[in-house]
Amino acid sequence: MAEIAGLSAGIISLASLFSNCVDAFAYVKAGQSLERDFEILLVKLDVEKTRLFSWGNVVGIARALNNGRHAILDDPATEATIRSVLESIRLLLTDSERLQRKYAVEELSEPAAQIATDIRQQNLISGTSLSIFRRSYKRLCNRARHQPQIGITKRVSWAIRDREKFNKLIGDLRGFVDGLVDLAPIAIQSAVERAIEDDVSSLRVEDLNLVEEALSSQGRYQALSDAVSDAIQAKIEGGTIDQWLNNQEVEYEQASQQSQPEPRPDPTPAKTPRNLPRKLNNPSPTYLPDLTLTPFCFIQACRKGSIVS
Image (tube, rainbow, N blue to C red; front, side, top):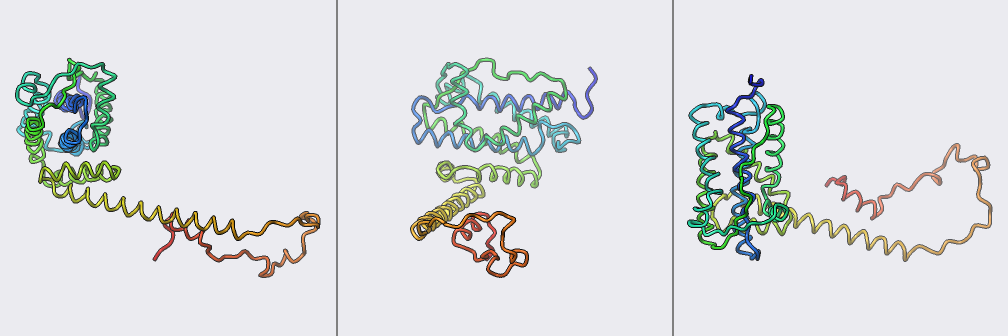
């Protein structure tokens, strides 16, 4: 079959290999009881997932030529190295015998629906970068009229049973991801770091605290750790300001209700537009609105960011 413009069998196969690596991550879980230590392990794993997914998105691994695909993917020697590393990652996460022997994980056969439910909580940081890749890969396959292949034929999940041995798995995975990132120019490496920092900044404070704890136990990724700390501080300060504004609004509304007198019935009939006073045609200051900024207006202006110091 003739190749479609900007696509080739090599581009499709490399993107498919990367997709198989993405799929392999989905079946690692903490086990039946999600203790804090196991949560930290999953976050450490998710950091490496996010680095891998962000690298793939930045270099355009699921994009066609002249459509956001970086030149390093088209260099034969570099492309061969990338394939080798991705294949190593795929085997690391799918080799049943080695997973159980070397990393002490336990195979759990579960219904697909249950697995899908469990894996949603494991994309704490990587969810955004994963979605970006999925969309790009789908467009690539549609353009090439290629049917995505299932990379993992046996749908099982792997439960963490030994903290120390699973840390070794994370370390081995980190080495492979480091190898991919180091192949790219400095500009690409910086773009990958920024993408990860953007993903982290959208997390809730409780999730950021979990990420901060996971990063502090590794002693790596100082820039990411700083970004997490900045995000926590910004969200705490933002929450404090919002709470203060809410309190001010409530206090103002309560004071207004207490100070307003009971309305008295007006014995005179309401005037229709035809019998309004003539002075409305030439209004005096009596009929001009009061432009004084009330406390309530000030609060609303603060919320909209229209008060400039």
